[in-house]
Length: 242
Ligand code: 5RP
Image (tube, rainbow, N blue to C red; front, side, top):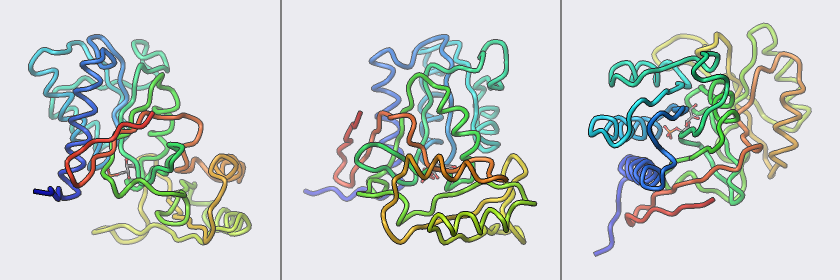
């Protein structure tokens, strides 16, 4: 019988498969420094890591969290969390694991649906290996025309940055809070402009061009690292792209 696994179960399947495969391959190992992502696919990866710790398959993990969501879950699970600046981390990680909003065939990403893009990029560009876990809806032919690219801006620069992004061909919307009046304020105290293009973009050139605008703190295009990606499908299979 053909299986039809719902999206949230696909997320858990991708996360469990990735964490257990990485452990079997020695890429998740005792004593390592690991970056932990944010969102509804990254959380099952944190839970899978916690399960490895609980059964003693790995010990002495040093985690860096990409958001309050992740650091609070790590606190609850007893996973020790450090700053990227802590002496034991030294600004570099062995591995980072996270979800994504869109993944193109070259494994370039849009991230930041959970507004954690700034700390995600700091953590994930500082990791020797980035692993992305996702359900099948995240795999697309082109990034930038479907899911919006989030741009984190300082509040004072909101309108000038929007004008500059329009000159780059984007339509921008200020992200509004849910059960919070007014804009989303990120974990770093900034605002988010969600940007879409009507035609495919050059993701690498656009990542650089957006960050050249004064007042932009970071954007959600991730093109400078080529991650290993685990994509779970509705039929219960998990595809690994490297
Ligand atoms: C948070 C992110 C998430 O990884 C991305 O939004 C995917 O989220 P989810 O796994 O909940 O679909 O970048 O800023």
